[in-house]
Length: 171
Image (tube, rainbow, N blue to C red; front, side):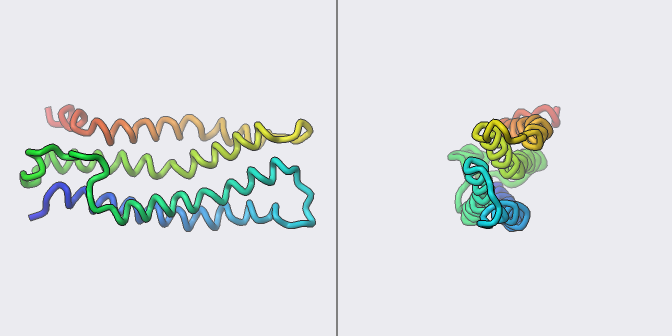
């Protein structure tokens, strides 16, 4: 028989695999953008050059998170299931609770790269010379700040309050 903890660990490892996939994708998306500013023939403001290099931080952060989740041997939060639930066999309500928690973890992990990109664009705006146009960065922040904050908030709520959601669903 499969325990709740085993199902949870399998889900966390799958989310870690998704993070590794995003890290590789982000390396090919953001890497060339940052590396084009390292060309000595292109004259770039120093603060802009530094913030572009920050884009290279996103793939290692996602990769490290993915490896951490893949190597996880215990639930991420102590007493994740409670003392009595850990021994019980899987029921539909406990499977739903695990699913809601994993969905919350997925939402949080899926928006980490967007949050880091928002921080890089904010740094560009803060440190850009006064003669530089930051309209593109401002548009990016306006477009992604609310979806990012809402998705992460929903992810945290699902992860931490999954039993409450389960009680609402199974009334």
